[in-house]
Amino acid sequence: MASSPKSLTLQAIDALQAGDRRQAAHLLETELRRGAASGESWRSVARLAAHIGEIELSLAASQRVARTAPLSPERLLYYWGELATYGRTQIALDEIDRLPAGPRNHPGIMHFLGTIAGQRGDFVQAEDYYRRALKAVPMMPQTWFALAMIKTFTPGDADLAAMEKHRAAFTRGADGELAARFLYGLAKAYYDCGDYDRAFANYDEGAALRRRVEQFDPAELTAQVDQIIATFTPEALAKLKPSGARESRALIVNGLPRSGTTLVEQILVSHSRVAEGGEVNAMQPALIPTEDYTLAGAHRFEDKVLGSEDPWGALAHDYHRTLGMWFGDEGLIVDKTLSQSRLMGLLLHTLPTAPIIWMRRDPEDTALSAFRSFFTAGIPWSWSFADIGHVFREEDRLFAHWTEHFGERILPVRYEDLVREPAQWIPTILARCGLPDEPQVHQPHTAKRDVRTASVQQVRAPIAIDRIGSAAAIAPYMDAFRATYFK
Image 1: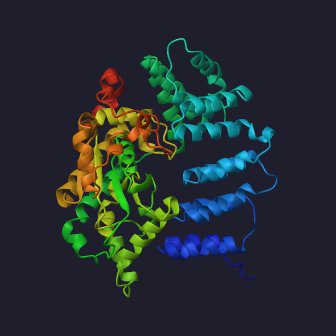
Image 2: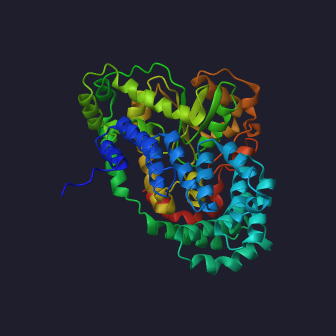
């Protein structure tokens, strides 16, 4: 008996494994054109499309999930969340406005509206939505977490007492991810109150739950960094075909999470010539044709496309196409995707004119902030101070390598210098990006835009030095970081 032909989605996966991103996108587009108008199976198509930078295809597939019968708040919220992720928040809000009053007051929708209000800097409105959700359904750990993130607790706080009341029920539940999220919120509450013993006990418990799902491998990272440093030299990159992408919309802001990258993004987006920015993750999908992002993979890619006059310009085109799907076709775009230091060699080659701002911050302050952040993207190394120390050491090695060999392309900026002397450093950053100074960029907290990172509150406040030295007060809790980082 003949075997059935593979679905177009499975064929797309095969194409990706062979490094053919464009063919994979074509197959997914065909699947959407021919496939059912609804169904849960579209959720996996949406994930795959997003993975390869095909935002419009991903949203189309997500919409079909939302249309699946019986209609449910969970599926609608999934779709609205995807819309918000890719800058289509208003479409989601318009759909919510069209709902009857009853469904519109669903606790999940109240939580979603609170999230959007917080991203827009309206923390009073966000708190109101969260409290309305919790009044209807107190057992919503994700909403307690969200509320904790936007308020400052004091000893004797009624919300802290309520969270402790629910703690046992949340932490013995089957969903470890939700339990971890709640524990991070509870830890933040105790941290606000200065009760660091309880704060770090809860952070540790939440981080342990996350480590059950995914483990970080320090040896694997070190091997990757060793290979990058050994192979990506100016002489080696010069042997690749030059990229024809002589212009770029991208302003690359690189740096560890919590190192000040969102502040620089906010400064740049305040400029009249900059449209938007975020953690767009557009370069990694564009470089899929190299298969493994190594220099050897880059040469294999060139061998596959021997007839192409400008293979790297083609990848730059795909990169800019993804930026366009995120933010439209006008203006410059800030790309502050995480972990781009590991792609820096191919990024420099693919976008030969893109300016790169590399943020650096006191390692202990950065480590503390990273450990205390509940990164929704999942950053396994952030769940252990020892792992954070290992990653920071490797990041230091990459920074030293890239700035030694490609220093003319990279502007290092220390967070502490930027917040102490913004009048000096903001024009320096703008100049590196080819932008003239403008008054509003010196007041970046006034920019009206959605911020979808853990720094959402900080960027709404004027530039200040109050976060410098934040780790000093809790030094005993960071021994594992220092033992690894400073060894």
